[in-house]
Length: 487
Image: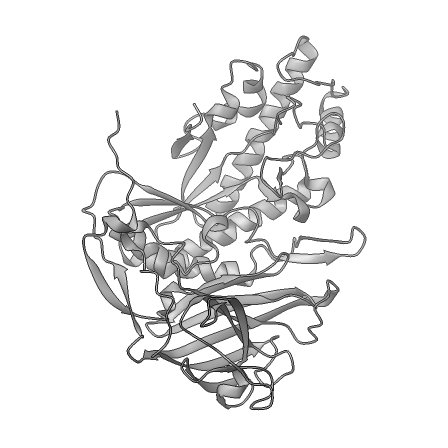
């Protein structure tokens, strides 16, 4: 039996004091299809990288009074009273972002309650508290004398800062009109909040200061679960909780791809020409550098998975009814067809680009291909019938792909032969990704992640033919890793 206990904030044994508005503890969020990330450039500086896709896109740079993201032993205390506090910082913006002095320029939104306990939201135009230009200015905020409203003092809406849940600074692209109309092209922007200073009697907050001795367990993380946080916060937490050595990081399937508007399908699709969007590249570069600096050994993991709404139609695996592979996520992801040349070319470029981030960040190149497989949904229909796959099978064998409506019932030699062929195709596609990575960086250690519960299913024994190819046999990969928590 594994002995364990679940920590709560009340379990904190050691704490320390921290200045409110510490750059590490800001987060970022935004609506799809735009992307953004937040990193820390210095002890007093945070940097936001964003790519806007629509005229109505808006990213929020968020400070929460309630710490919803930290491990309980490291969490910041809940401190909703901002009275007696001042916040000052230098605003610097480049690229496609509305300036401070624009009609739709950056706004500090404060959500909380008024002195009577009624829910309230205040909208503070930052330009009213700025000295400088719309792109380069010093901003000073005193929460005791702060007013919302666009024009001051005519439209002043006094802020009561004694019960604040959260606040966020919004940034939007030029031409912002709140609509879903696509921009002519993706619009990149960078905003830096530098020289961040909090002063006053309310400027300090207590934070957990745990330090767990190093142990034998290793950490796994994922970008889709942590895209909104600063890498510095994550890496410091991993180290403080005693994790050392290998750090497997799944780059995800929904936040790293660069997107383009496809008018023909009226959708935002992965851009084959740009493997990683700018915000994800900046975030992962910082993540790797900080991990390596603390002696951790990051392993970047890439799967054959892509958020369905961003996947070109021809790239997706399909079942015999023509339905796209769809995982149980909401919204769902899909799986890329190993037979589709465009999908596999994109995947190889992405793999090479992420591995280059490892090298540039000072880490040993260790790259994992995660869970490559043919999808089988809850209806037991194998998704091995996309057009590229069936066409390739016909071209190579002269045979039409036999229909399999239920992977639990594979009753003919022709169907078993087709599954064997699909398995070999998957194996070849996996090796092609491996070869692309090693061609760029020959010293790369390659790893394969196998998800046993999905494949080693007694109810569907023939699934092994498609999803456990012989091409994976040693010495194809340096390390085999198993994911089996569903057993």
